[in-house]
Amino acid sequence: MTANPSPARPAAPRLSRAARGVAPLFGNTHRAVLAAAVAAGIAAFAVALARGEAARAWQAYLVNLLFFLGIAQGGVVVAAAFYLTQARWAGTAAFRLAEAFSGFLPLGFVLFWGLYFGRTLIFPWVLHPVAQKAAWLNTPFLFARDGAGLLAMTLLSAWLVRVSRSSQARAWAAASSDIEMPPPAIRRLATVLALAFAAVYSLIAFDLVMSLAPAWHSTLFGAYFFAAAFLSAVAAMALTAVILRGRLGPANAFAAPKVLHDLGKLVFAFSVFWIYLLFAQYIVIWYGDIPVETFFIVQRVYYAPWAPLSYAAVILIWVAPFLVLLGARPKRTPVILGAVAAGVLAGIWLERYVLVVPSLSQHAVPFGWIELLITLGFLGGFVLCAIPGLNLAASAARAELAAETH
Image (cartoon, rainbow, N blue to C red; front, side):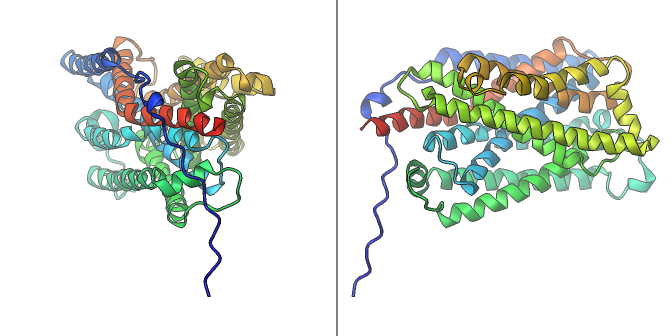
């Protein structure tokens, strides 16, 4: 007897020779500009150290590391979430888009170790140990556990991206008309990655943000922190989709209003989730009114110069997306969705800044050319690392539409 053959799965869409002939997204000029941005950031960091502004330089370094690492890692977790929820609404293009930023993860892992050289200016407990927390807050143990966690996340992410780009996974993503589950290997890997993300980025939140104010603690802070990283990746995906839509012309998957609509819904939903976690954390601290918990919030929410920045972050991350993206049409409108997504990213950068810097600079906002150029340098490095992934996302978007029209 012979078993009945299973139905043939459609092949993953492949890019036509004509499509491969389209000009690349990033030419030599773009790469030169990005490299110049990186050089400017490195030069600003070095000049700040030489001029006695080392504290500002390391603060900007930490803020940008947390921000860009969150986007890169959050994007891979978004891809894992797509597999776990069988989200095939944009075919392979959505997966390539989510994975596009993963190229920064190895660089981010290396940059994390740079914090060791600025530890005396970043972590107050290095020069003034907290006796009750000395077993946890000490330099060797902090870098060992955080380094191990980030290494595990980098390797897991690289593994998931490699499996996700296999022909079997691409064929599954392209076949949106069936109800088949994703390949078993990627289902297991996506589950492990999602759980590891929650654990490791909670640890990063406790060690690289909360420990800057060693007396403060919040059990919800870890979830709040990694949820913001996830939201930053969703917003980066939406902004990138809008940009690619314009760069690739009408013949690409991101030109479909439905795809933008779905990305807009993700931005809307997770901005609401972010404010939910923020308020859940705030209301417990406010109601308890315990000084060891309230001082962190009071400094940032009730007093200048930090209160205006905190409110600006809330407006950019939640108020604007909630009001603007409430209807269906704004989600489908590229200019509106792109502007809101860019605002969310600016708000999350500002939120990271407000979480980190007031613990180290209580009475002044250290923001000027040092912070701007270091941020520019991180942005240039991030985009350079993302170029291969963005090219794959563009190719998948073109191929997806070509497959639908044939």
